[in-house]
Image (cartoon, rainbow, N blue to C red):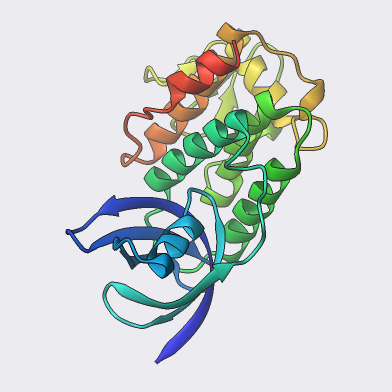
Length: 238
């Protein structure tokens, strides 16, 4: 039985001498694993080129524990995503983070649509690239069910990271942000892909914002470990 699936490529890992396994987040089946041949033949090389991080692909595959690809093609061309050095670094960071937080094998159409549209936007983007990953990560929380409840914010309040709310009292645990950083988090809530180029952060501010977001993700998802590509972004957007 063969199915056609639309997917976003997350990562490729070694499997054996003949195959790698590519992890793809699909529109209709959630996260799936596919065998990707490692031979030097023309077809195998072309297929591997399709499965770069964050590529949007259409796959025809049979249904097995590890899926075999019968046919694959580019779903949406992304001419600058992998050739532009800064966009490529951003895409690698986003791919690494998504590989940590997406573990479900159930379909999530809104999440797939958000990732797919964001990838296409990044490919077209001409300004605001330095803030793209910050905006993407903050809004990703909406689709993962961990969006901060900004309706609870009042000036001078603290953000309770465990419960996702702002509070005027000091929580009975250590996972909270002081008023200054809580206000910075509220600033992020006003950022969108349309206005992100208007936000100005220096290197230390941008790194601290990323640390806060990733720390928040870790509290709500124990699978989020070290993000190795984070230092590359910090160096790029100094």
